[in-house]
Image (cartoon, rainbow, N blue to C red; front, side, top):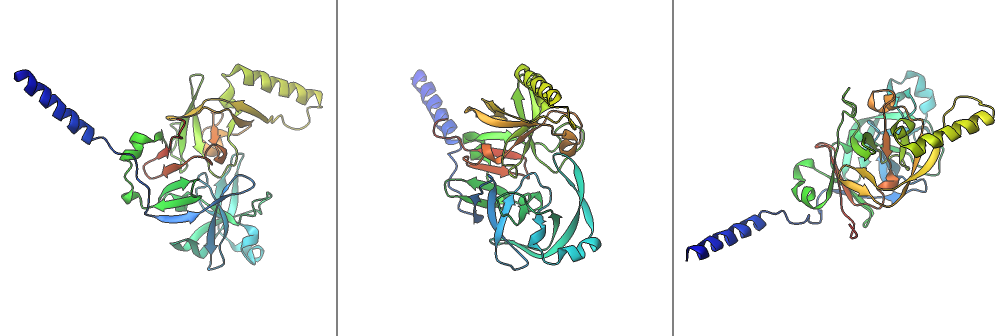
Length: 315
């Protein structure tokens, strides 16, 4: 009898334990749903209205601290250029000073921002025909849900987002704003793991391709040989200008946080200075672009610094 009671108690405890397991995430029905399309250049494009004009395509860019607009989108901007205030804009290669304007309105579906500060950038030179880009000044206000099956981006109120089921059922990538332990950045970084190296990874949906700098490859013998061969070719061809080699390589099992891209993926290796992105010079850096994310359903929780990726059926 005592043995039966003990077994019964253990059985009840097991039921209670099962009851506390978070169920799989339910479909998200709240928030501002925005249709998107992938451009020929590989960017996320959403319709945005400025100053009550008809909506036009803007790039979703998680590596832009401030939203921006390209010159042709604003009338008479050249006449105003000399009188506009300016701000420093960091890029992958350098920091430049750009003019700033304040829009009467910036509207994304039901989201409306008045007197919105925005940076002016030179005209795009690709096939996107984008009017501008939406950066972290807007995106950080929300939990951003990207669903390629429905071709929608949902902007959720962070207070209404329950992350517990996603922590259990989806892959989590923890993010940081201090990639080199030097200074806090407004950008979001993860960690990639390769040959015992921890490589800071900038989450950049505005980059159509995934990239890394040569410093990140210094412990990888095939890359050292590749860089040496490129330098030899540069010398043979006359050693004109500065040696800034670029190469496209294929990398399998790219591991970022808890997620592994097991399929071989092309990665551009180039001279990218970590100083302009992370505040420290000559440090390893990887740029996680839209090419690795475009077929994934994922949630970007910028206020709590987490990226959740839904596992595929094969995973």
